[in-house]
Length: 229
Ligand SMILES: *Cc1c(COP(=O)(O)O)cnc(C)c1O
Image 1 (cartoon, protein in one colour):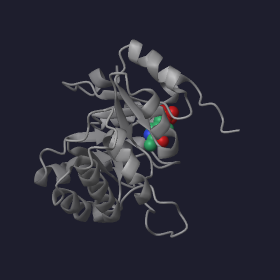
Image 2 (cartoon, rainbow, N blue to C red; image 1 turned 45 degrees about the horizontal axis):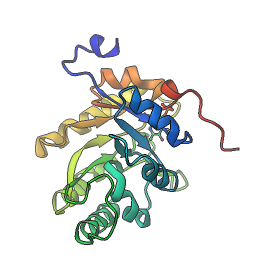
Image 3 (cartoon, rainbow, N blue to C red; image 1 turned 120 degrees about the horizontal axis):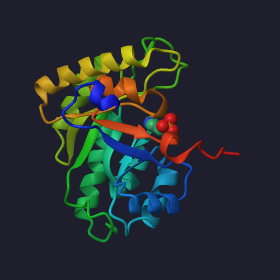
């Protein structure tokens, strides 16, 4: 077992990523005892969350998030793992405050009065920020502090930890080792930011060894994703 070999007291939490899979699979998984689910696009997650809102489960939002989607994501996400800029912190805070205030907005997951836990997504690509054409995969390490301070200054968001996707063509152990260092520095100022969301199907052992508390696993649980066609 990866957790045993990393000599950890607590096994990491499994988040099953159900993108491209139907709500009926989510229901089957809840019957097997899965309670934590992940989605990376609001367009897909929103309707799926409505369909599954009678089940006992939590949705984790794990994908790149446009500020104009904050309004809907706060209605079903029990945590947002992919906060990578101050403008998104502000959009989530505004959306969450509005959701809390406007009692006519449906609240099937009973989230209205709860604070929203958010994680800072860190771009672990060593070349991050040097090529403007490269799509952003999180905040630059140098931006973490500013984003953390922005989250701490909100009324409705809590800083829950850090998240990352290992860069392609790189050693995940080395990359997750850097994430662990960023997490450690963050914890020094924000001791409640205990989550480290790292590890997907192909690199989960390296993530566990580096101290991941939450694994985001899709294909190892559900099989290969249906193609987008
Ligand atoms: C799809 C996805 C996962 C799961 O990937 P698998 O390789 O299927 O385990 C994890 N994290 C993010 C951000 C994803 O988009």
